[in-house]
Length: 151
Image (cartoon, rainbow, N blue to C red; front, side, top):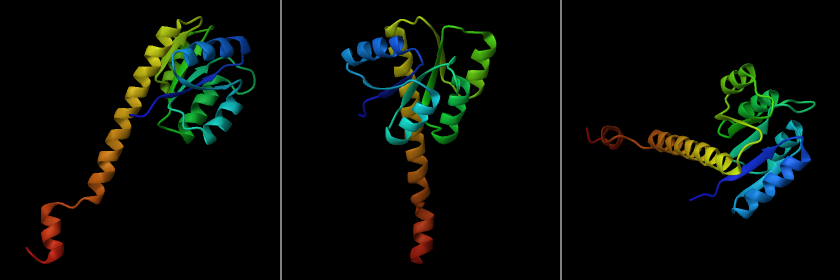
């Protein structure tokens, strides 16, 4: 079974380093980014399953980053994280494809549980895609007989 790879995206260096250390101690594979642009760059070279993404960042904010991630990497699950939650930003994030929403400060165990749930969701989706692809290559008994001239 594949191990979950997470990316933390936040402009607060202290939050990034502290959370990264806690998650590394618990055995998770972590990549960090200090901006939306950096996150998109790292997604090109790392196979990331779940992104924990801060909403409020200078430059490219979390909602714009989320939309760019979903456009280019639709299977990446994104959990929005903010210390400035508003109903509007929560709704906007969920409408744009976020899987979940967490408030800062967040308990690391809660973050892990939500990330694990998002990873499971992705694995189910990947399995459905595999099955659909397999079915598209497989022929029914009737097609096999027709192709061999048997029926």
